[in-house]
Length: 251
Image (cartoon, rainbow, N blue to C red):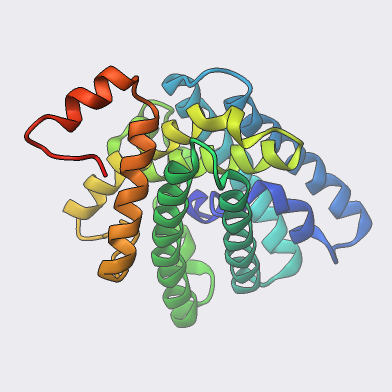
């Protein structure tokens, strides 16, 4: 089983995906799911640390691959697990954006969750096509992240996956009672990872950049919001200096 598939399962909803299994198997898998959540939550319990993020992605890939392999062997329906994962992810991302609404980290979370979802929609489509042709066997031919070293997982192209892990961590933290305002630094961290990864994917022919089809009116409103957020981070003297520069008004 490819860890690329496993990494798409939202950790906050693993228990929901395990419902319907026999009690004995569910208990075993719930223990594995708890280990995954703990690995991910460590990312928001400390200041941003790029090496810690890579180590967490490596651990998550290994743990999730085992859990998903066991889950699919029990339910016998990879496509069903995939559909549940996508629906759960979309719900989590919508709820995370709502939690960050009006906070410093909102724009970063908005951009990142939309880009990550675009990436996963593309991956979901590949899985759908492969399984439609040959069943679940093609999943084994997709590069397995769980077999990669932690150093290999630091590749720029995997920035979107590292960002996804940070998004999952913020979802778990918010669900556990954390305040979005306290996660602004981690939201920015996720955005920077995702944006860097998106540039590499774009060069390789996959565009995950959000807002690709928004209207001119919505784009203008969004850019004005970005300008207002940027201005709010500046002291009056700096803002006044930029206002008078040739770039023009931040508004």
